[in-house]
Image (cartoon, rainbow, N blue to C red; front, side):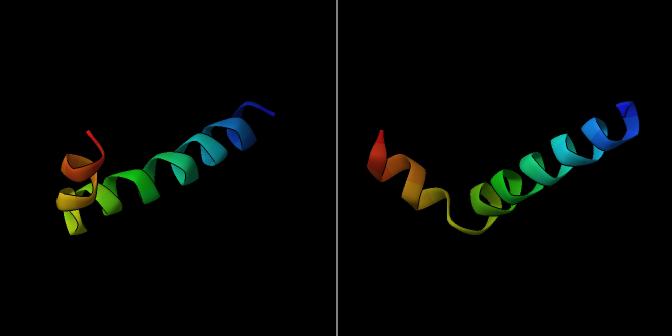
Length: 31
């Protein structure tokens, strides 16, 4: 179970980092 949770956490974090790296302008526009 712990490994499954860790994997899901990584899957949730990666797309966020990719979005920040690819399109930081989206975050600056929102804030």
